Image 1 (cartoon, rainbow, N blue to C red):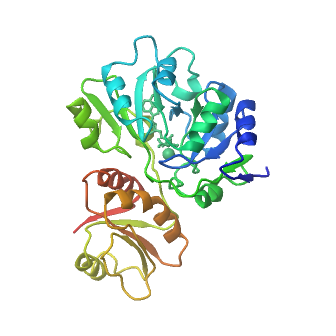
Image 2: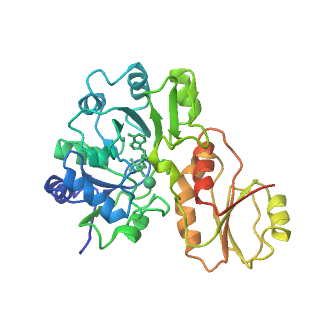
Image 3: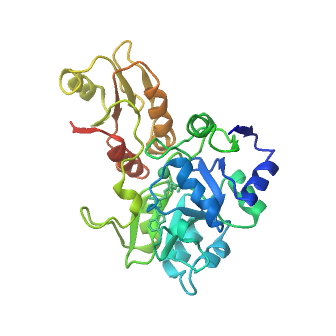
Length: 331
Ligand code: TXA
Ligand code: MG
């Protein structure tokens, strides 16, 4: 299939394609999404085929606002937690899980009785939803198992030849996916940390809980390997030059050169490729996936990511590294 790049001001062909049941990759403020008309079962099925996504991993429906959420939830399904969280953080990087209305295709929910819904803030995403006057089902626009795309080039790398249109919106502002909050439990359950920090969610609903480790996979996506580059990725839970030097004498000694992804201020050995995660948690979230993709393309033997913070968006960064790393080393 020939894939056409569309600019931000040429959305008409993308809207027509979505309305016809075809797929379009588009930018959101978190990551690029691979979108389909969310109420057409056959369109939604194509997402799984194109990504190579396991059928039992449900999708997020993207809407404009709380009214869009109400239409996808069962009557009375939008409880006070779903209301107050969406009031506080929509449009933005927050997904709420609520009991599903009967019109939601089972291809979206993967047979669950709940549905995940998010209102993105990105103007291109919003124009597409408004353009088809229906929710858009969209996972991240990567091939299954690969790092999520946070730049047009990354979405193109994975999906060119597989979808008719990819819309170029430049880099994504947040850079990690939305925070997924199951509002059907008491207290609410944070299924995936993301662009809205745990502290921010707790400031609205008070108490929060997390899925029990080792318990049943509450969010089917949690059981799969994710975000992995081709090279081996070692996560060093540290953020200083001394720790890198120590790792070089120890865990990194069997390797030749490493490509190092680290916050500002870590000094990297001469001749090693490096990518900075910037000064803080927000910049690290924005850069992480792009850093992994770019360092994967260097001639280094291994990728090393240095990251230690769990504050704010640091928690989402740590969560993605937990899933992407083949080895985690606490220094
Ligand atoms: O920021 C984002 O959320 C991006 C952009 C494109 O909006 N989308 C995204 O979608 O990250 P995806 O498919 O990569 O991740 C959706 C996550 C998965 O972990 C999935 O298991 C979970 O949401 N999920 C979807 N529906 C669910 C449901 N009914 N109950 C529990 N978890 C659900
Ligand atoms: Mg994904």
